[in-house]
Length: 191
Image (cartoon, rainbow, N blue to C red; front, side, top):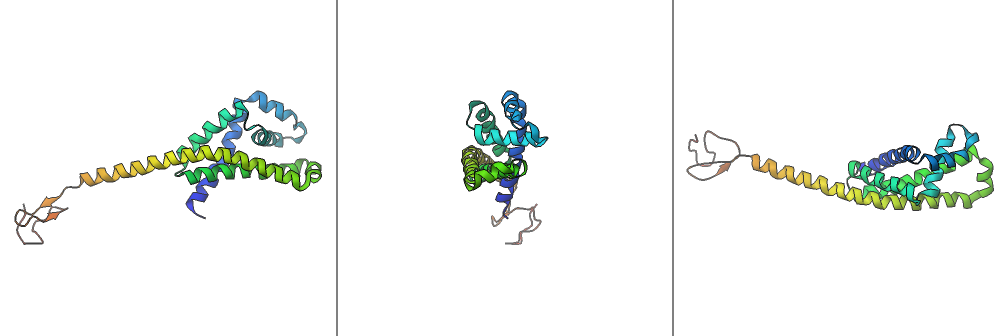
């Protein structure tokens, strides 16, 4: 696996965890309302509530004001190109969709069985659409990060080139990076 894919997968897992925590703390009313629908599921209720908000409420004003800036900042900090950002967003959406299907299978097996293939496809499609929306913001942040990194590298290269000192032979004019005692071209002593 390439470093781009590993970085994107790690960023998508981190993004999902970060979004779950932020939604829980910054939107307690909406989170508690959704949490009440999963009361009988124990600790899984928190994960189910996050999945439900992510898949069904992503484009509501409160949620989108948390998700998009968080994705942008995370992609600027962690990613290096727009491809990484897009891949991170899509893999986050797919990760949440697969987690949703797993939780349905474990917690509500009857609902998954009655919904069948159409429910599976619906969850995957919604996750991919949400992931694409997040991926576009991540791509913007990743491209900005990539430009900053390439600019920083370019600035470092030019500053290190200017720090080098060149010495010239007084007789033949050949330049040396180090300060030699004798010119390798003409044999003249150099002070």
